[in-house]
Each structure stands twice: as C-alpha cells, then as structure tokens.
Image (tube, rainbow, N blue to C red; front, side, top):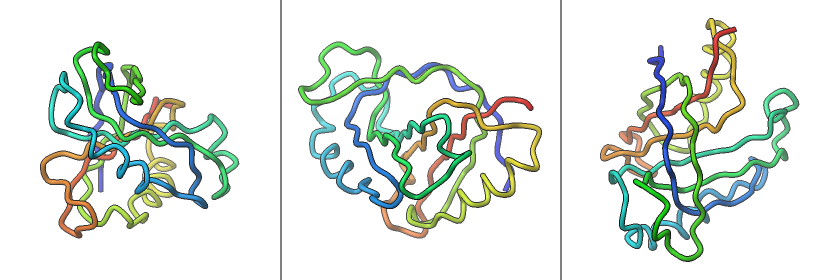
Length: 158
C-alpha cells in the first residue's frame, strides 16, 4: 500500500483531548465526550471528524506501551470564535504528510505496523515531529470492516 505524499495546509481544530497511552487507551471515552456536543460547533468547515495525536519527540525512538500521548477528537473550523465551553482548540501547522487510504476496523493495528515497520524505513522519508491525524469522512463507520479513513503521517525527506 503506497501513500500519496501531500502538503497539508494549516488547519484550525476544536474539540476535546485526553492524555493516554496504548497500555491505558481511552479513545472511546474521548469520542463519547465529544460526539454529543459536536453540534454545538457553529463554524465547522465540513462534517469530517479529525482524530489527532500529539506524541512526545522520543515516543517512537524509545517506544513502550506506557508512553503517554495526547489524543484529540476534533473538527476543522474557520476560526476560534464561539468555541463551546469545555472545548480546546489547536492550530495544526502546515506540513508534508504521507497519506494512507485505509479500509478496515479501527481496532486493527496492522496498518500502523506496516507504516512504521515497513513503509517508512524503506522510503526516502523520515518521521517528523508534528501531530499525526486521521480524517474520518462520510465513509467512516466505527467498528465496521468496510469503514474508510485517511491516515496522515508527518514526514520529511531524509
């Protein structure tokens, strides 16, 4: 599976965030807190959901399942005016990404094993320290093997 290489423009995101690890994975809790309140966001640019992860710079170099990271449940907005109470906001910077079109269960980690264990080491790119994100569009269906999403991995030439 070869990705497309794309420059993502800056995105203004608003939503909820939680600190977690893969050993204490709380993504379902995060989305359960976000989804009922999504309709309060008045200035969204699309209906696509964006699941963003901010890793510490050493997360992958010294990987352990207990390494903590910040996961966000967000939507892209035109500006940060009128953000609902209790929501956070984030400026996702412009940058180069490898974009993988993934079809399958969101619980299947084999796509990430392929990206980090096979594709990235054999590519002309290396991981860059910027947020990772998935775009959950119209074809995304939670816990469905026919679900589709885009996985955006921040990269730079070696």
